[in-house]
Image 1 (cartoon, rainbow over the protein chains, first blue to last red):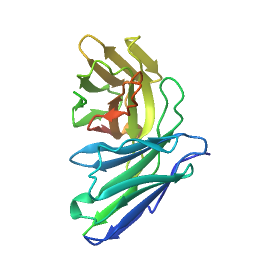
Image 2 (cartoon, helix red, strand yellow):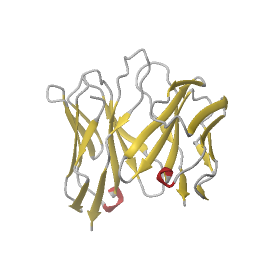
Image 3 (spheres, rainbow over the protein chains, first blue to last red):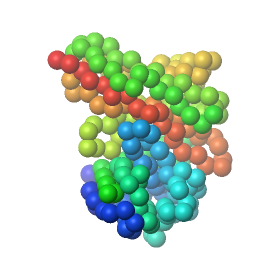
Length: 115
Length: 115
């Protein structure tokens, strides 16, 4: 069955290193979201795209985070340089936005640990 | 004004009991209110959703109650089962905002159903 895939599932890295997380949305979905989940803050929206165009990235620290959709089958979230406070689970979600409410389908997440 | 406040943070219910989770919002432009369920190690998944033209929606053991004047909505889980033990997130979105918006999530409620 169709599902959102994310790679890697786990990443441990040292402070200052670059981290790239990848997401393959469900085929045909035109909206992609990046969320960060921590115990303290819950689910935070970092950025989202519709038809590959960025609609909102106000949730991202712009100096170190960047999100792109090189094509309709791939979304990337990059952190450079990484810091210990970036340790969290990062979720990608996709959906088909046409008219009215639509479901967001979440991937399994990337658990990032920055030491 | 963009926040969705969720309570309680955690909840312990006996098997067969009723679980109740509450959410409140400020932004009157919100017009779509879903609940997502998340099991450990998984991404959130849509459980049930409501639009403000109705005051209640029921799907099996899960019911959303919506109070537009109070700007509050709640999830009721009837006959709670150990398999319902998960984290529940309420969310809200302003679907009619032509500028493009995304779901705003509450901070989550961890439900434990004891057998």
